[in-house]
Structure formats: structure tokens, C-alpha cells
Length: 366
Image (cartoon, rainbow, N blue to C red; front, side, top):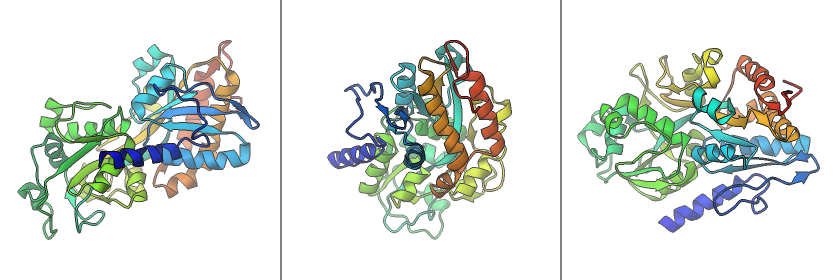
């Protein structure tokens, strides 16, 4: 089983090394060498969150058609993305766990959001269809603490009347790498389960009380798909692409809601980016009808001072194109595009925050 999951993970990860699988100069430690020059401009490199990897892959494919520029994105997890941008081994890092303003300042970094998405619990239960089973944050906390060990537990049955739950032991699947998806998930568990908050807490990497670990969203999805009785958590695009059964969750107002782009948008509707220093903003358990409780933005990290102005400009040109032309692709993959006013705000921030050593903005279009 382990070999199968690893093979699946590597296959998906290879596919996400955009236009460079087998060509990128990644070291054994996962550090990327400086990208080569190509006809469309400098090839740009990024690394980090697996949460947005499907949309970054789609954007990169379309962008290359119009610009001739290549993007090599390594979906290695948010923790890895933060480490690589801090080490200056990539042109941008990507993380679903936003860095706090004081940490950005200390590291000389700037962050901005790209899209909004949702983290969903996924299960492998015979006869259970997507959205058929309901769970609460408190139940998820007990499951991931190892306190609820069987799908026939009366606490699960109580909120699923009429659903034929199998008498199977629960196999918990979690991330094995530093993960913004884990940060969003454990932040939600912390808000709903006092026991979880006390014993484990919220972070991109935690001491999991029980279960098996998969690398990346694709690794978690692989383990759940091949393990009857299992439960895991992945970004919604991975659930739909892998045709996985997901659970409904109880929202902030007490109603059960299914994960959809509309539910993610409902959670993001009250986001006040203009009042978020360093663009640090969480969208967990937001009030409002139909708001998906594990919603979050995903972020790009760049150095404020760019040693190579052309390379910095190339990164911002790519995301400027994505802001302008990428909404349709994002929507098809069930991400939520940012509102236009937020995109305009971020573009203005680029000229104020991403500069050359001489203090000049690297992106003239900002």
C-alpha cells in the first residue's frame, strides 16, 4: 500500500513540475537551482503549496501559449515553499498559511493572495456518495484525536439518520509534510474542539495523535482512495478530480453545507483585505448562510528587494496575467477568483513592495 501511494504521489508531483518535469535542477534536498533562460523571457520557478497546484498548472499552460514563458512550479507543501523562498532558491514561494506581518518584515518578504478555495474531509466508505455523510467540527476533532474509532459510533450515527454507515474501523489520514492545508484544517479543529486545541493546536505541522501521513494533497488522496474506512482532508479540486466522497460540514450558523465554489465564495464575501496588514487574513468558520467553514486564500511570497529585476518582473507579469485572464480557469476548478477591487489593491502593492536594490518598482504595469 505504501509503495502504491508513493508511486501515485510521485506521478502527480511530476505532472505538476510545469513544463519542466525531468528538466528542473532540483537537488536531493529539494532546493531548485536557478532556472535557465528561454525564448519567452527568463523561466520562472516557484515552490510550495499543493492546494493551488491545479490552478497554477492550468494558468502556466495558458500563459506559455501567449507569452512563450515557462513556469516550473514544485508542489512540495507550504512549509517547503516558505523555506525555499527564504533560501532564495526559487523566484516565489507559495503557502496557504499566510505569514504574519512581523515575520514577513523579519524575512524581507511580501505576500499577496491569488485565489480562494476550500479544504474538505474525504472518506472511503462503501456505499457512501459525495455529500451523503455529515460531520461536525467536534466530531472531526474526536476522530483525529483517536477518540472515535469506528464509523458505526453512535455520535456519527446520531447526525446521519437513514444513512447506512459501515461497521468499519476509522483510518485517519493526514499530511506528512509542512502544509498550509493542514494549517487551515487544524485551525478549524482548534476552533471547534477544545480537546484538540489543548492537546494539538493549529499549525502547518503538528504532532498527529493517530493515523498515517501522505505527502501533499495528492498523497492524502491516494491513501484515502486505497484504504476502506479511511478519512482525510484535501483541497476541493483534488476531491473532485479523484471522484472522492466528501462530507458535508456544519457551518458557523449550525446548518449543514456541502463544499462548492459558491460556499467558498460565501465564506470569503466578508473578507476585508484593505484592513489586513501584510494581507494576513483567515477565512475559517465565517458567519453567513451557506459559508463553507474550512475556506482559505492561498498566497504568493516574494522578496521585497529583487536581485534580478527582470526575473521579479516576470513573476509579477505572470500573476498580472492570471488576475486578468485566469478567472474562468479558476472557476472551472472550483476555486474562487479574487474580487476586482482586491486585484487592483494587490497590483498597487506590487509597486510599493517589490523593488530593485535601487528602490525602483520592478513591475511597470503596477
